[in-house]
Length: 156
Image 1: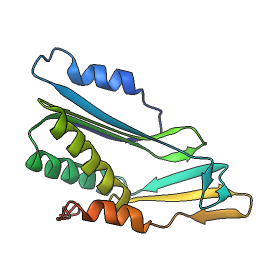
Image 2 (image 1 turned 60 degrees about the horizontal axis):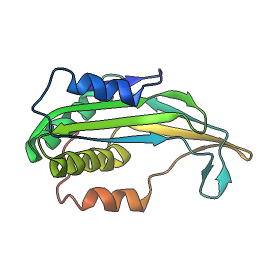
Image 3 (image 1 turned 30 degrees about the vertical axis):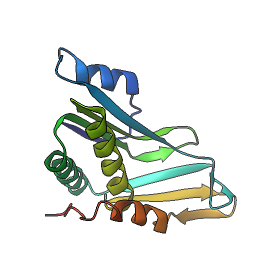
């Protein structure tokens, strides 16, 4: 398991290669890379700044990965979330999940992303032509997380 909160950019290929290095028991790796967009809610976005609480954020992400491991037979998980000022097109988040079977890898990857969007302690501020604004949670993200029927306690 690898959980990082960092300002530095990550490389999907390198992370997946590291995950499968020397392993022949992995049948599937599902991954998701989230990117900063240049538009949100109909407004142009020049940049986005992500903030977090060091220590608390990593603990919450570890609890989320533990919950995914309890639900599915996973062999490895990597979660990397960037912080700081990001420009449109910059990668924000990487979730990679290894399992013996693709179904478990896909489900766990989607589960982790759904909860990252709704429960992880990150705060996003966008720079627009009209000034700065904090990004509010979306009802669609909450609905995506709710379909998993049980919210993990990320702060226990």
